[in-house]
Amino acid sequence: MIVRDLITAEQSNRRIVSPDGNWESTRMLLKDDNMGFSFHITTIYKHADFQMHYQNHLESVYCVSGEGEVETLSDGKVYPIKPGTLYILDKHDKHILRAFEEMQMACVFNPPLNGKEVHNTEGAYELEAEAVSA
Image (cartoon, rainbow, N blue to C red; front, side):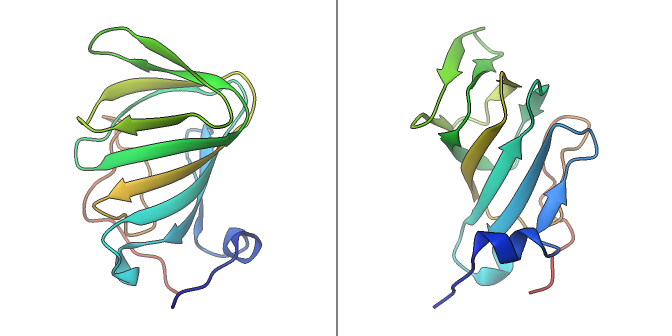
């Protein structure tokens, strides 16, 4: 059994802060845990507005708190995000995420992240990134 708590993880090398200043993510479950997916608690900072395109991963995102929107670039559709909203990037969807206020999100990635990933120039995570130590 694996048991971790968010406060302890936030105070460790599992907390990754985006170099562009849009988000921070505490990686609670990673590739080395051998579960086949990773689980993160991610904070999207107020007024963040940025594009992502996870070419190597599928992601499900559940909004715990805050409000914003996600826009799919293939069709220009805009979906509101509020607590209780789940959006699933099941087709490697190129999208823009906008935070009207700080949002806390629970995120699941498949395949799992190693730990130290931040977005590349395409807005994606690389498959082979540095792992965090336990």
